[in-house]
Length: 318
Image (cartoon, rainbow, N blue to C red; front, side):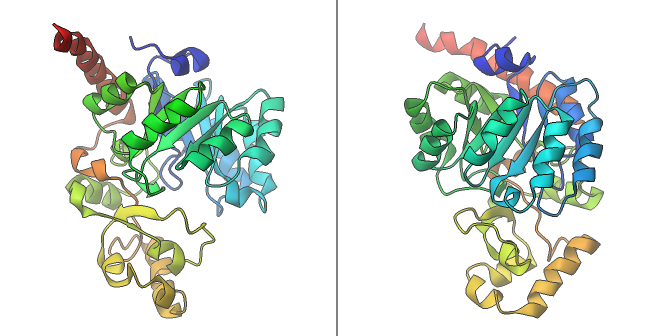
């Protein structure tokens, strides 16, 4: 069994946290990750309701789970924070903005707080806010992310804090998990390996598209956010599978901001699951996701393969 400060803090069987991917990570996916000994997370977006939070957080039952919130959303949506506190998760991540205004409320409720960090400035801000767990998220990650690669960022974050640091971005195998644990991470934060799991909120067509994709098929772009007129801060573009829309509009965001027809095309595509126009967020490790398997099996295999890889490490010193 792999034991780290993360597993001890949250009484986990494996140092794996399921990324809170809004639109994918609901209560069923969170529960499936937690059944394998990890910590599943429910992803909450700005278009979700407090009722959605309560409904999804009820699904894991007595299993440990977490909730992922977006800091830039919470100023206008205090109901999402209130619903999250009422659900009593073990961990809440407050990312993509300043977690400071929300940490006190969560700590007062006995809830630990994580924050994804993409720069050194993010690290200093998270530590000053008294965040319990830092997630070093590299640009290999799917969904919204920064511009630094996982391994250099992880190494730098580890020099800046003695709090548990979890690695995110590009980790999809036991070897990858073992690598960041050996580097000093207290755990891994995985999303892309869970995109083809049947417990997800995404559609069968989206899961099939993920299984067919190669690692070279992603693009880091703001085009989808601009098209949907979302107020995502510019410093966090989104890594998605390239499609007809991104090939047309990536790099033309200024023009796209004034093209209402293109905007409507993406909005309608999300409703109809048109994957050539709508975003399908996925990381650079997507080429390793080739089967539709339960998230419980994904996490168990990830852990078993990491254990084997870590046992092999002493042989390097013989």
